[in-house]
Image 1 (cartoon, rainbow, N blue to C red):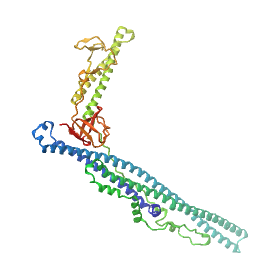
Image 2: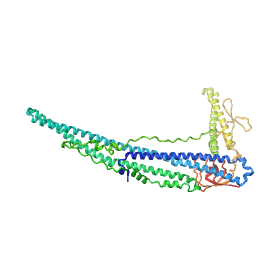
Image 3: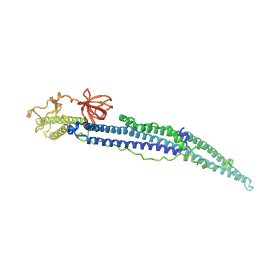
Image 4: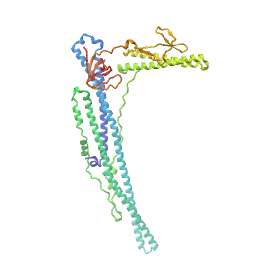
Length: 531
């Protein structure tokens, strides 16, 4: 059973039902979004609670920390922190797999539905236009035939009038003949228009509108299938990241799998089927045979006519997502995880060093150019270089200040800010670049290679530095992509060495056998610390 056959005269019902279905999808998306906000707030409160009751590092050496009851309490806090991480993952997956996906699909359904309703409106307007032409030709036929009858009666009356001349009789007969001919042409035109209208009306009721209604039915069933998948994802998302609680959400899954789009369509049909038959053809009204003219309005004025079948499409306001605000980026990269922050600070230091080396090279070039100008005035004015030399000197001072600032931040972040040995540079009054000798005295030697980096090689003390010894090992319970900077990927079941414990932020630093290091979510692994 389909809508085009069973609901051929229920355009308004179909329009309202499909609109209601789209609103249901919007309502469900909003419901899931609010659920994700609850999960995020819940996870944040759990993390704060765990952090509040977790003793500081200085307190872990207290005697009572060795008590089993105290250790159990610490285990509870760690489990609570891991549980918070799972709730955050639930919120993220629901937002990606349900809210964003359904919102995109909903926009596609709206555009498709709008197109079908426009096609229905065009078909209605075409049928109405043909009906107006039919009505006009019928009225003209009626009018011309009445004129022909009056002309015939006048010709007969004139012929019987003994006072009428032969010319008057002939003129009246000619007029009656002309009127009869015009009426016959109008009759033929009316018959042609009626045939055209009946053909288009059959096309409208038996082909065009059923096809559009069936397309709307297919759209609605696809919408029902998609939202049913969203119902199932609502449960599967949580079950996927919470295997330890197993089957606590199977009831929701069962509710989602019980959705049947075909049964929904049957219910709509049974509730709204009118049982009326399609209207038959409009009969030909032959005024020339004296047949009483039927009212044209009665044949097409029923609620099942083309003027009444289609309703008006009403515009709807749709709920919009607001975009999430991005985290505030700080100059010292304090918004990043520790390892990521250290790397970014190292990169920033290298960038500053390269830029500083360029400025130093520029200063050396300007100093040499100034010496050339002083020795050969015809080549240029040395004073013309003063502004460039001054600007370069200011740039070098500024970059050195930034270098010191980032070195300080790197040291605060636990990085090895003193591992690079930099050459000190000064500038004489002429802008020439001098190098300080190891004892601090000025040397007349210039830098042997201008392309040499401003810093030398790593200190010898750090060249042979051993990697930090692992404090334990961990086994991955789930796969982790490690797409963010500072993190490392892992596969389910993989064993990694633990280099640094979770400091309360939900991340643990690990190392592979090949030396790769990075951070992973603590809740994704089981950790065993060496005694």
